[in-house]
Amino acid sequence: MLINPLYPACIAVMPTEAEIPLHRTASHRSSLRKRLVVLCLLWVVALVPFVFFRRNTWFGRPLSDQQIGEYLHASQKPRLMLHALGQIGQRMSRHDPSVSIWYADLVRLSVDRNENVRATDARVMGEAADIPDIHGALLNQLQDGSQTVRFDAAVSLAGVGDVAGHDEIIAALQQSAPTPDQTLQALTALQQIGGERDLAIVAQYEAPRSDIPERVRQQAIATGNAIRSRIRHTK
Image (cartoon, rainbow, N blue to C red; front, side, top):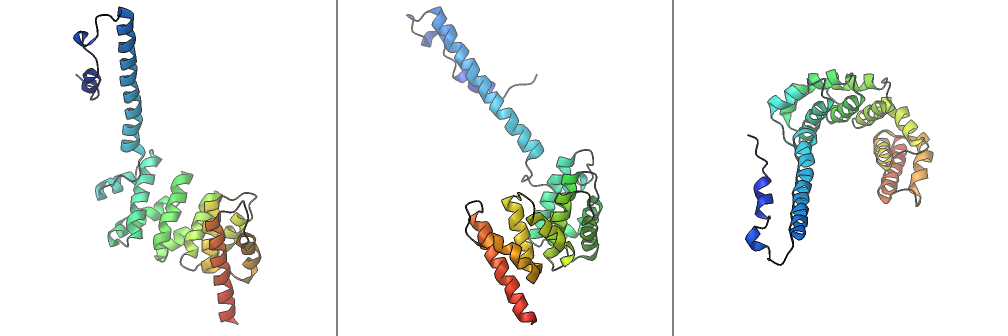
């Protein structure tokens, strides 16, 4: 029989007949019990989503190497694939050499049918964009049908000084309403590969504006300075 782990706790707070003053009416006792039952139900309602989140959607939950390998092939469950990619990305950011066993999977997922998987894969591959096969996969993603995937691939390539995705980065900044995070990523990429022709668009983010977060403005200033420094050194 399935036992509700909250059942004992619910029972613990239920008053016994002896604890209820005799002057209380039956209706009062019934009302109290109903309120306690509702309280127990609220605990259950709060617990179930947490358990589901913990078991199925929390990408921070550590995975074993075996689980990562299995999740990378869970083509019918994109969330599992995203979980595995997130774990690989974390390891790559720590320069963990063991992740090389999944490089082939990263290349394979660069053309996965799920857009979120391809975009996440593009960001993860940025941690190893100097690896020839991964670099080639990122270049191919610049032709992806999704603007998000193209942008993420362009940013990853910029991280290793490849200007192939330059126009995609500029296109993101020229959108009518780029998100602050996207703007920040684009400006950071231009800090690596931007040229003199990009100073005008970078300047739009350097001046104080109420609609531009300060962190974005500071990145724009850093990007502008980096571009101007490169110009001086090439003349």
